[in-house]
Structure formats: C-alpha cells, structure tokens
Length: 113
Length: 114
Image 1: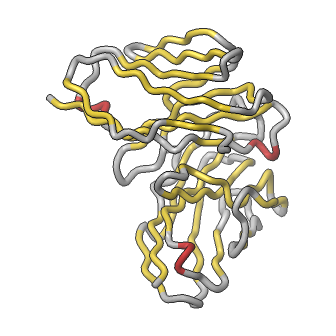
Image 2 (image 1 turned 180 degrees about the vertical axis):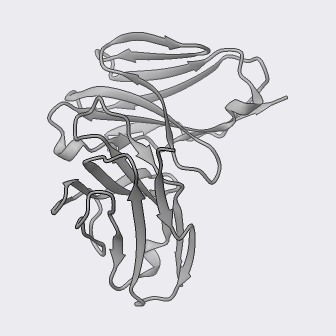
C-alpha cells in the first residue's frame, strides 16, 4: 500500500466550478502537508502549506487537513482556465528521513472556458 | 531571480553510456535532492544532500550516483543507464532540512534510454 494515495483523474470542469482534490495517507507520523501545482513541461511549485488539522485559505484556494481520518483536500473556488495543471499533494513527518517529501500521484485538472 | 537550473532539458541516450544531469541553485540553499516522476507513481526521491559532502540515498537510488562538492551544484550521474531509467527527473532545493521551508524545483530533464 502506498503511503499517499491520490486520485489521478483526469478531472475536467467548466470555468467557475468548485474543484475538490483529495489525498489519503497511511502514516500517522506525517505532520506537514503541502499542495504543489505543476504546469505542463514545468517543475512543481508550492501552492499551499499546512501544519495542523483544520482549514487554511489563500484567495480562491482552501487547504483542509483531517488528521483523524488521514485525509487532506484542496478546494478551488471560481476555477479559471489558468488553474489547468497537475496538482500534487505532498507530506512529511517531523523526524522524517532527510526532509523527504512523500508525494501523491498527482491529479490532472482541466478547466474549460 | 531565484531559481534551480537543470541541464539538459531533454536527453536521448543508449543503454550503458554514462551521462550526467547538472543541477545548480542560486539561493544558497543547504538542502538539495533529486526526484524522478513516472506516470501513476508520482515523484520519488532518488538522493538528497543536506550540505556539501553530505549525501544519502532516497527511496529509489539504484543505478544513480550524486556528488555535492559545492553548495550550489548537485549533479546526478547515471554510470550505466538502462531503459527502466527512462523518466522525468527533477532537482529541488530548500533552505534547510526543516519541513517548514519551501522546496524549489527545476524545470525537469526528460531522459529516454534506448
């Protein structure tokens, strides 16, 4: 079983839709949770970072962490064509080996005008 | 501009022919790492380095070597490439090992071994 599971999609939505991206994990030692966005032919870029359970909002993006269920989500409101990308969840434990990030498989999102 | 630079961006090579993918960062970061990205498997760490002359294996180190002689550079070496090393490779750097520091990724190197 993979430590982090993410629905690979692809996911196609109309412009303006609310998008929900999700990851589950098995390692209860994970303390840090991140979402990266990767445009085609580019490297991943950090989008959101959370440390604790609960919600964190940044503009149209909301990251949600539920440690009791080992479940994290990224919500995108009023989605735009420029949001079309692959979204990767990543996580790590406080005493993790060499600061290693464990990534999900990535979800490919397409927002249609 | 703060960046991580990888070269080359695309490479096609033959089995067994040694190659090096270079990685350089201009942010004076201590921590650097290499990942490979494969469909359905996501990003997996190959090697990492916490500082000059300090390197260690990640999850998938077989067939790869690295060195960290200078803080800014972290080359990935494939001594005898094989077709199962065909993949998209990313170099990343962070200020330190601490998890509250952002990881910056290079543009990627798409390697094909025939």
